[in-house]
Length: 102
Image (cartoon, rainbow, N blue to C red; front, top):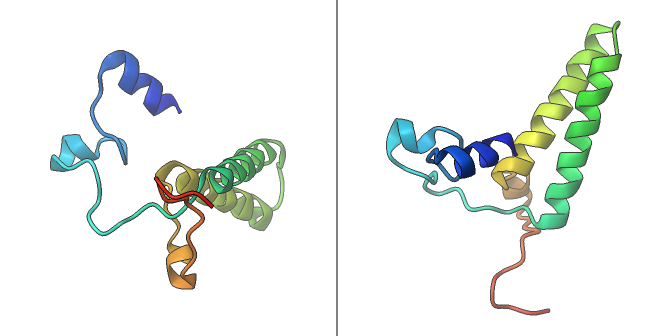
């Protein structure tokens, strides 16, 4: 979200991954199609944010802090990129196709 604000107000390039266009001149990674829908993204972002907040309050226990950090990182990253490698392995796609109605 912060990156989107910086893009809008400062005119920074890049649509998919921050800085990707600056480094490679490409805005989208070839062969990576988004497979996470809006509801799924909101759930992932919520879980990632909750894990990040919980991580701030947990002071002891290396394993718990590691797992909370991993959950926060994975949840927020997959919500931001709209791509889940696990969904590719399972053949899932929660993203709705444009132009098609159910």
